[in-house]
Amino acid sequence: MMVGLAAILLLLLRAIRNLGEIFYLWNLGIKRGGFYAVRVWGARLKPLIVLLMIDTIVVLTLIFNLSVRIQLF
Image 1: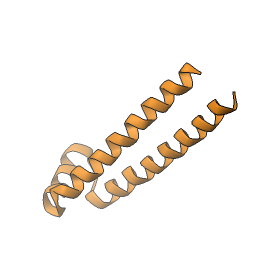
Image 2 (image 1 turned 180 degrees about the vertical axis):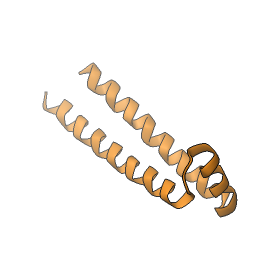
Image 3 (image 1 turned 45 degrees about the vertical axis):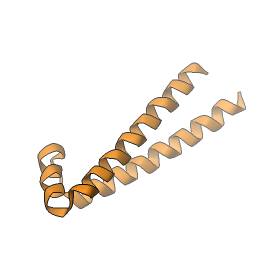
Image 4 (image 1 turned 90 degrees about the vertical axis):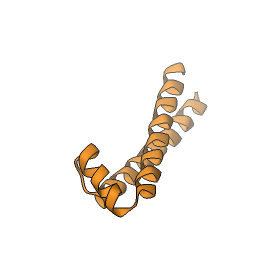
């Protein structure tokens, strides 16, 4: 049970970090955000934002599934 809670906590931190990165890129604007995305992530801005959004959705789905399984036991 403790392992499941630790996994949920780590996944939640990953989702929060992804959302923080999305908002940071969004606030930089198109030109500076594109430069930052290429320098730091090695990707273009729009595909990077889409990738971070998809990763966040998958992580939140995993959190939901783990929390349901923990409540069953």
